[in-house]
Length: 237
Image (cartoon, rainbow, N blue to C red):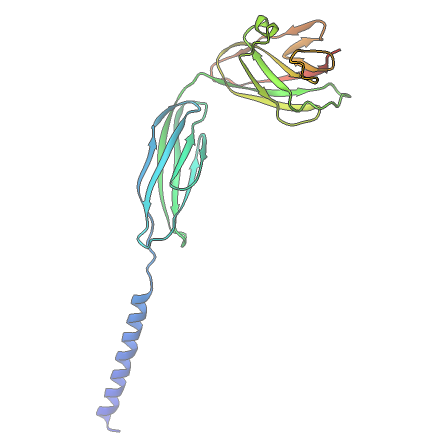
C-alpha cells in the first residue's frame, strides 16, 4: 500500500470518528432551568387570619413536569401546585413566602412574595382543664365557654365556645382570636345531655371556690396579648 492511500484511509477514519462524536454530542439533551414569569398574591393586603391566593406562572423549555414548594415566615400555606392559599397569621405586619419551582433534574427557580397583614387587635386565649389529683374521669368532649358577663353565663349565652383537645383527666383548649374585653370562662361536660348543669356533670371555671360558692375571676383580654389559664374541674354534687 502506497503512502498516499494509507494517509487517505487514516484521514477518512479520523473524519468519520469526528463526525460520529459531533453527532453524539449534539444529540445529548442540554437540561434547561425552570423560569418563574409571575408570582402574584391576591389580595396583597388582608385582615389578620385572612386568606390570600398565590398564583405562580412558571415554565420549562424542556417541557418537564415542575414541582412547586412554598416556605413562609408567617401563617400557613394550604394546597399544592401552582395555585395555593396563604392563611394569614393573627399578628399584623409584612410576611414573605419563598416559592421554589423545581424540575426533575433538581434545577430550581426561586422567587418571593410579600403579604401585608393588618392588625386585628385580637388575642389568643388558651389553657388546660384538669381534675384534682386522684380523680381520673375523662374530660374529652368538654365544652369551654366564654361569657361577657356573669348574667350572660346564668342565661347560658356564651360569646364563643370550643371543644377541648385530648382525653382523660387533663385536656387543653384554645380560642385563637378573641376580641379585647373582659370575659368569664368555664369548662363543662354535660354528662346526661340535659343541656343544663346537673348532678354528675363535670364543671370548672376561671377563678376559685367550689360549686356551692364559686368565685369567678374576670379574664381581661388585651390587644394582641395572649392569655393562658388553668381550670380545675370537679363533679357537680
